Structure formats: structure tokens, C-alpha cells
Length: 399
Image (cartoon, rainbow, N blue to C red; front, side, top):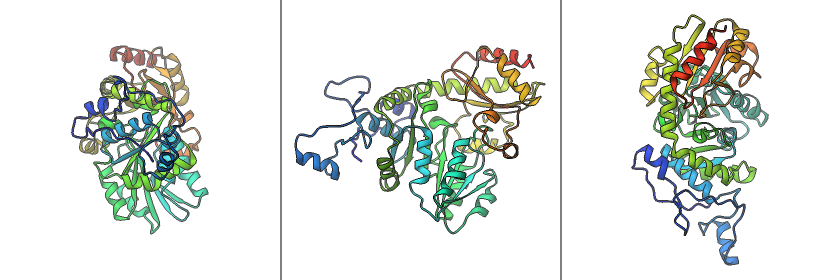
């Protein structure tokens, strides 16, 4: 892997690192990050070319392996997250798959919280066993369940926190301690918390993954993902996997992500404030069966949230009374909030997990995960909170 490092800004505040980390200016001294839209590079001599491929020359070879714009995004993410290294991928699921599969081999065992995004569950429950990697799904909130699931061949723990879509918050530091006691690594999907509100590596996690498609881009433009971990794990396991299998982030998408990072702080703060206001406005509504928001005192894991998160979430979960029929009437009555399975966008988006993100799961499994037919997941956007609340309350009046 060839990269050119910009000066480290790791001692500065997150908001400053979001704007300045990883910036590599060309000879023209541009203000905005440069976009190196190229698939390959040329060399001054055969000797220089050979040195690039052996790693003796720190330049770039081929954009599937490394690219200046992608490298800038990786460095900015690493400094933001407090990681030794980062590698970008073509999507969030490419990041999850590479982070899980690259360090494992046939005969290994994975323990994972069963409350997770449907595609993540597919990787753990269906894909890994095809390659001889066993997996066990447990109740991630039950620390004893993590310990009981450990086997002599357990190599990886995997979790999301907050979980998709029910917004449970798992105790990352306690689970990391169990994982390390079993000589296993802990992989955390931190998408719902964002780098602004939670730092899993500081809590003991070994690997953090993001779908950069969500808050990092944050405006519904393109796909991307990123893996953050130690230099050793990235160089010895992740990099070779990405190099040979090719789920690379395009330079253009990396440039979009760099632009997104510059405003991540102000966007997430506004979205979190909107989500909190929506949660307070909807709490106790007679047509709701339940409401969950990580910033409220009535969240079931409020103590864990206070310990490990710096803020709430941009997402709110709530269940309408009357099941799927009532949920669909509510969705169809919305005017401002849009129906979409995406999240972390400038627009407020809402989805019905039982028929979208978790539709492939059997009804009894969805029931086990507390995803009933009336449950909805709302991603707060940047609109004025009063307009959003008015839209949601008016739609509730229609069911």
C-alpha cells in the first residue's frame, strides 16, 4: 500500500480535524481537496516503477490499490477516529465483509449480536459458514451471553451500537474485555452513533467500520465505506484482501466524502437536535405503542449511553398501534418526511424495517428482535424541527 501522509493534526479537536486532516495540496496550492480522477500512474524510469511495486518508493501504483484522493479520505478518517490506519471501500457492506472475512479462515468462530442490519446478519449467519467459519448469534445486551458463546476457536466478536433499527445500545467496553479475554478481536459498526458521538476504539474495540454512504456523505449522493484499525491489522490482513478482491472506493466518491466530512459536525449536531425534539414531541402519543431514542432518560440502556456516548442519535424508533396497516397509512400520509431505507441524509427519511431492511428475516426472528409490524425507523434531517413535528403529528391523525 502506497500513501503520502499529510502532517498529523491528531492533537486538535474533532471539528478541526474534520476540515483539515489528510489534506494533500498539489503544486497549484488549491483550497479544496484535489480530485485525482485517474486509474493509473506513470513513472520516470523503470527503476522507479519497480520500487513502487516493492514498496521502496512511497508513491502510487494503481487506483484499485491506492489513490491520492482516497488516501486523503483515509487519513482524515483515521485521525478523526483515533485509529492508526484506515482503508476505504466501495460501500459500507464492503467494509463490513472485508473487516470480518479478511482476518478469518476455515475453522474459526464468530460471535455476533443478533440485532443488526439485515445485510450484516447475512454476512455473519449465511456467508461466513459457507467458507467454514462458524457463527453464533446472541442477545448482545446480555454480557453473560457473550461469555457463554466463546469457544476455543473464537476469533471475532461483531456488534452494532446503537443497533439497527431498534436503537439498543450495547456496552462496548465490557464486550471488548470479554473478547480480549478470549483472544478475539471486537469489530464495531458505528454508523448510528457517527464518529461525533461515539469512539469505539477508545472503548476497547479493535476495528471500527462505517457506511460512509450515511452521515459522512450525508446528502444521498454516493456509496462508500471505511475500515479503521491498527496499522498491523490493516497492512497484514485488510490491505491484501482489498488489493486482490477489488472493492475499492472510487476517487470521485472519496472526494465527495472529503467534502462531506467538512460539514459532518454541524450536520450531525443539527440532526441530533431534531431527532431529540421529535422524540420528545411523540413520546406518550396515544397512537404509539412505544418510542425509543438514545438521548432520552427513559431509554432502556440510559446508563450505558451516559458512559460511552457523547450525544444521542440522529435516529428515532417508534411503533404505531395497529400493525403494518396502520404503519403504512401513517407513512402514506406524510408530506415532508420521505419514505426511504437510507439514513443520515440532509432530508428526513423514514422506513418500515419489517418490509425493507429486515424483510428477509422470518417473522419469528423479527419478533425476537422486537421489530414488529408497526415499528418505524426515522432518520432526522436538517429541516426545521417544528415542520417535521407538524408533519409527523398530522400523519398520526390519519391512522
